Length: 247
Ligand SMILES: [Zn+2]
Image (cartoon, rainbow, N blue to C red; front, top):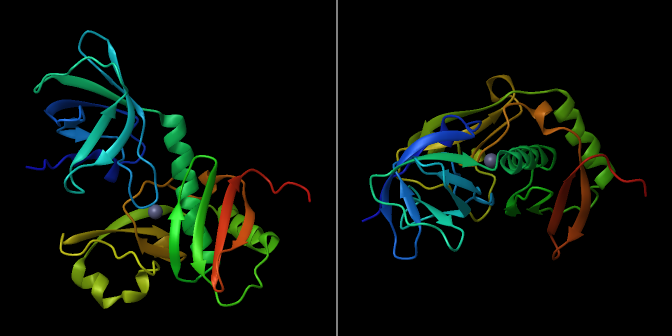
C-alpha cells in the first residue's frame, strides 16, 4: 500500500533541513519517510538531492527523489553502497540547498515566461542552469531581446509569489487558469495549489505543485537563450541565468 508522505516543502519551500522517521523501504532500496523536505520529480521540476543523517552522524547520500505508487508517496533514492536504515529510525534531512534554490529561481522564471508569452504550453523542463518552455504560438514575431526585456521588467518589479489552495469546483469555474494544453492538474483530490504572482495575483495565477522563490526579484538576472522552432506552431523558449551574451 502506498504511503502518504507529509510534504513539508508545500508549506515552506525554504526548508533546507528537517527531522523525520523512516516508515518503509521499497524493494529497490528506496527510503520512505513520514515527512520530507525533498521535492519529488514532477511537473517539469527535477527532484531534490541531499543526504539523510543517522543518529550516529553517518550520512546516506540521496541521489534522486521520485514519487511512488501515488503522487503522495515520496521515495528517497539512495546512492549505491549505502547502509540500510531500519523502519522507525529517526534521521535528519538536508537537501542540496544551492541546487534547489537555483531550481526555485528557474521555476519561477518559467512562470514569468508564460505571462510574457500568453499561449498554450505544450511542455516544460526546469533545470539549474537552463530551462525550457514549449508553446503553441501561431505568430513567430517574438524576439529573444523583447522577451528578455519583458521578463526583466517583471523581475525588477519584485512582485510577491505565493500559493493559495483552491477547490476542484473553483478551478472548474475558472478554466482560464490552466495554461497547459495537454497536462491537466490532478482533479478529485479536493485541493489544488495555485501559484500566484503579484498583489492579489494581479500578474498571474496557475495551478502548480512545484517550488518557487517568494518574489520575482529573487529570480535575479535571466535571459532568453534561444527560441527554437519545433514544428509549424510550436516554439521552444530557453531561459538562462545572467545577462544576455553580446551577439
Ligand atoms: Zn510552478
